[in-house]
Length: 294
Image (cartoon, rainbow, N blue to C red; front, side, top):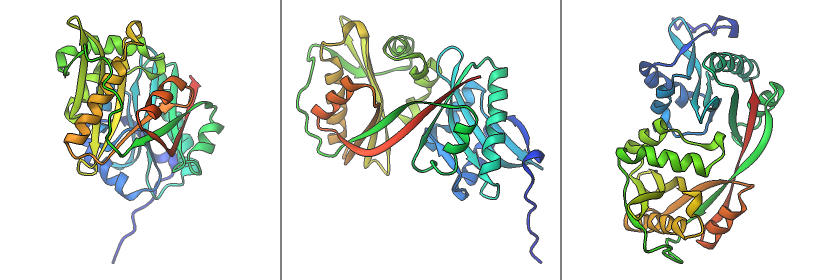
């Protein structure tokens, strides 16, 4: 006779830190549930272990959900993924999962927590996130490019080479200078993406790193996503960003990539003008960023 597994109440779930052995069952959970909000791809879940902020919720040794979190800079962190077991009611689970994550993060020195929401989770996640006091900050909009033409090569005096782990301290310094605190990628993230970013380059002027970019590939190499591009603010206006973008498009063309995508803040008009001039078009994707001070 088939025995049905008991669905625990939310109050029965025990919280503990995420450990590496949780990753395989977490992927299994992700395959079965419609209640998953992700702002990072699956192959970057492991990177969240480095910040020791992520939590799982379990009952009798089985995972019933998780909240993956990672630091930005200082006391600021992001919820990178929130996953709820398909047998739980998201209206109850989201509230409890957020409370658990906020308490854990606050205990680790986090003072501000951010999360992204898009149309896929607008009905089951966003209303409860808003109810818990998260405030709308801005939208992130998606762009894509299918024709791998290059309108200009930018600063041809810049030396472009593959990034190495030895470059990470300088890359992190540029990143911190180029972005607001909540958008900064720390050294742990910038070093951890080497295994999942086949395109990772730096630009040098006078033997000094002045910019960088990295991209990931998906769908068997048919699609690439520009995760990050940044130039030292003191040297912006010298077409270094154009050069980095041109190198990426050229790499995509040589490697058979059919679609190149990226995201940018809806408030960043300068970046949008650059991407549109380079042949990128809005793809209709939009993510809402929400923030809460703990």
